[in-house]
Length: 219
Picture (tube, rainbow, N blue to C red):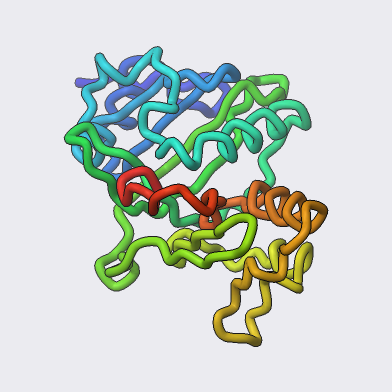
């Protein structure tokens, strides 16, 4: 018969590990340095990488290259202020898979805290996006004289920061709603690059005018 070790109302010991591995959602725990410290069996099923491969490794291995900068910026900021900006609602994002492909997932995030309430990492819970929500298209490219912008509607959480920060380029009342041709001088180009870099989900990305279209697996 199993023994349930409970300390201050928290399940500990071997059964805590069993509970983690019995969950049907993928659960990932990362420490303050961004290293994976827990990777349950559902992660193996969803992403393909074994627990032996994932644990102790920088979580970058599952993040598409074009989304890594935004992840690093957001996670570093969260660790500095001791809390996540996320409100706990699921966010759609793209993850790489061990077989070289990619998958759209819905993911929630929570701060990992010790007994003193200090943030010591983060917990992410992921499941595949439903077929209804999975896009049948990739990124759309919008061209401009100095820089191009790509947009992946499946990643957008309609935060609206792009419209607020640069309405001359991003205007949902017009078609197309993204018009990089308005960023036609160096100052506006810099503003556009900053606005896109601050996209919280990576739905917006910058491409140089002579750069080929994004690799769909790269996000």
